[in-house]
Structures are given as structure tokens and as C-alpha cells.
Length: 210
Image (cartoon, rainbow, N blue to C red; front, side, top):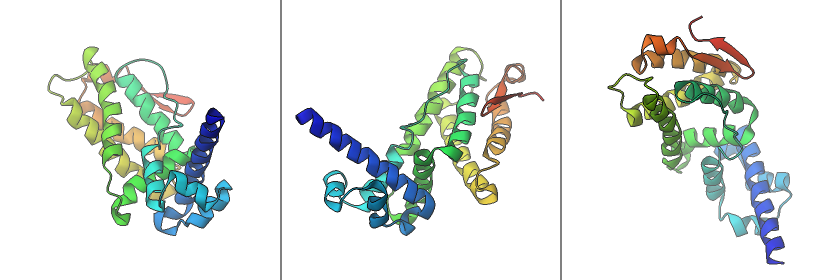
């Protein structure tokens, strides 16, 4: 019985986060109403308060769990894996509502008083791990500061997706992310390493030297 209650509670929480993501994605934090979220989820106010005490707590959950549904691409290690990850995220930003809403709320949180930097630290660590592998493989310039460059990637990615959202509704995000990486790579990797890499845009791959 206890296990069944826990399973129901988990499903209720997941439904709340999913519905909240859909409403936040459409309307932003200020435009999203709790009633709209609850109606979409088919959940009562009392059930929501068992998991989240406010819209702010629900928004924080969407921010923190934005990557929960992502399935990281598997392939070559090091810089190629980093490029594959960036290309994959550009595609997921257009089709994964939890990821997209979480990113939107993270960017807009200064306007709504959330002020939680932890998700940016988490993303920096994901990129730093791939950079660390690249260093082990001898792909990086010796002077590269892994932690600093990981933060630069997160910052550049954040700004690039905002520009893509405004210019095309993110339709051109994969191309913009590729342009960003083309500009950043020479700062960390020798030309002979860069020449071995390729970019991926969803199911397509393109030689980085083309």
C-alpha cells in the first residue's frame, strides 16, 4: 500500500512539473496561473500543495529538473562529445518543453525574484567533464582553464539561444550554436585537432572544416 501511495505521489509530482513546464513555456512566469497549471495536470489545489507550496517552488522545480528528460548522445570522447552534446541540446531546445521552459525560467528568474544559480553550475560541470576528457586525449592547448571555459560555454549558449528565440523562435538555433562553437574552438584546441571534428545538427553531420 505504501508503495502504491508513493507511486501515485511520484506521478502527481511529475504531472505537475510537466503541466507547469507547458504553461511557463507558453506564458512565462508572470503570465502562468496556478489554475491553468492545475487544470492542465488534472490535479486539485490540495494535491499540488502536498508537493509544492507556491508557484515559485513549482518554477524552481522546472528549472532544476530541466535536463531530466534529456538522453545524452553517446559517441567519441572529448571535444567531439562536447560538440555532439551542444548540437543535441540545440535540437532539444525546440522539441523538449521541460528543457525549454526550464531554460526560459532560469534566464528570466532575475525578473521574478527566484535567483537560483545552481543550474548554471550544474551545466558548467557537464561541459567541464567533456573538456577534462579532451585534455586527457591531448586535444587542448596546455593553458586552457577548464572550469573557466566551461562557464564561458554556458554563458555563450545562454545568450545564443535567447538571440535565436527572438530572431526565429529558435528555428535557427543549431546554426547559431555551430557558429558560436566555431568561434570558441580555436581558443582551446590546435588547428590539427579541430580539423578532425564535425558538427551535428539533429540527424545530420557536417565536417567542421567545410
